[in-house]
Length: 187
Image (cartoon, rainbow, N blue to C red; front, top):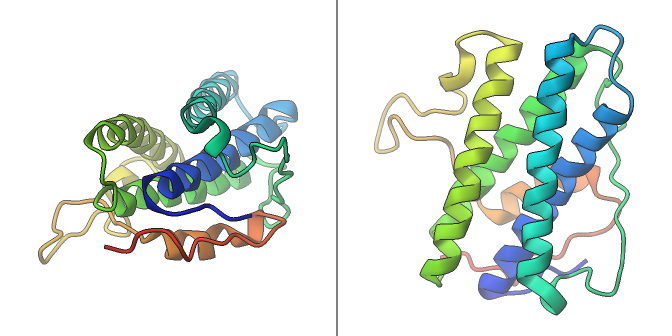
């Protein structure tokens, strides 16, 4: 799967991330763990709905420029997660949401078109809220822990940022195809 180059490639990159998150939340909603509370269920339905909206936004925005415009469907592999318990599901959600926020943070400076940047920033703010919510459910007060918010140096007080290539490496285990991201902007 080749993501492309320039802003289009970065949109495909974001589209892939949103597909991954939407598929994850759908999997959870389809088979909630037995120890999920009614509040957990409602939250995960909301999270799923947001991710589906994000996925569909990118699908629409990309049109025939989407890497899967030929109708290719991805079945993601979540077998590395323990999705049979509340703790396992929240740990998986934390991993995916933290990765998503770091991905948007790292991609923002690479976007050339200001309209595209504004749209991605809006989605990134929602993703950050998701990450904060999930982290707070896992461990109250951890929404701004030092593993996601730098506590010193030039980045003090800022969320972490990862390059597209770093993120592709992190999510590769969930994607049953080789992700070609070598043409994405790096500066």
